[in-house]
Image 1 (cartoon, rainbow, N blue to C red):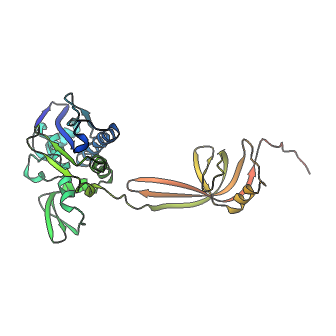
Image 2: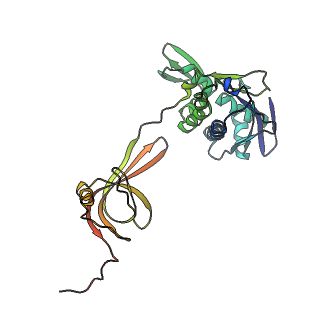
Image 3: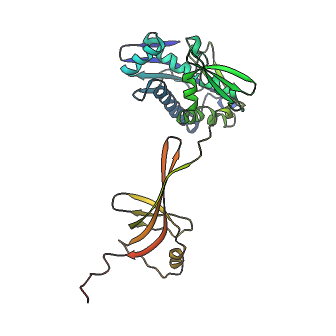
Length: 313
C-alpha cells in the first residue's frame, strides 16, 4: 500500500483493473472508461461526505504510471477538518485516513478489523436477496440479516449502502462497463497487484440500484399570465413559457385549446400571452426535487402589441 500525507493532504494510491477478451490488446473504449472514472470520483467524494461531513473534499486523478489495460488511480483527499475528524474517529494517524475511506467502500482490505468488510463486500454478500432486518450493536457495528444468514458490518458501511447517489456512481463504475461484451471482471488493488478485490460479470448486476419512486410533495393550481417563448405542434409536446421571472416547459391539457389550434381558429404572434390555470407539481426523487407544469385551462389569449386601448364609452 502506497500512502503519504502531510498536515494539509492525505494521499492514497490504488489501482482499478477491467479485464476480459475485449482488453487483450490492452485498449479500452474511452466511451466506457471516461464515465467510469468520473463516477469513481463521484463515489469517493460522496463516501467522504457521508463518513466525514459535507465539507470533505475528495478528488481522483490518473496516476503518472497510467497504462492501457491496467488503470492506476491516485486518490487525493484534502481537508484539514476532514483529517481531524478522521483522526478522532479512527484514533489513528492521518496516514491511515484515506485507507480507511477506501476500505469502507470496499476497494481494499481495511487496516482495522472493524472495517475489513466494506460496501462492495456487503452488496456482494446480499446478492439478489433482500435485507430482512438490521440490528444495531453496541460497538458501532450493525448485524445485517438476509434470509437465514447474518453478517456484521461497520455502521458507516450501512450509511454508504443507503446513499442513493453513491450507489448510482458505483453502478457506473462496476455494472455498466461489465455489461459490455468482452469485459468480464472489475478488480482493485492497493498493493501493486499482490491482492485483489474482484467482481465478475455474474456479480455485476448486484450493483445496479433502483431509484426510489417519485412521491408528490406539493401540488397547486394558480391563475397565471404566461408569455409564449416557443411553440410545438407535435402531439404530446410541451411549449416553453416565461412568467416574467423564469422560463419553463409546460404541457397543455386544455383539449378545446388544442382543438382550436388544429382547426386553425387560433393564430399566434410574437409577444402573445396566455392567461391560464397552471398546475404546478413538485416531486421528490431520492434527495432531489423535480417540478412539472401543466396548463389545465386556457382562459384568454393576450397580445399587448396588437391594439392600443382607447377610452370607449
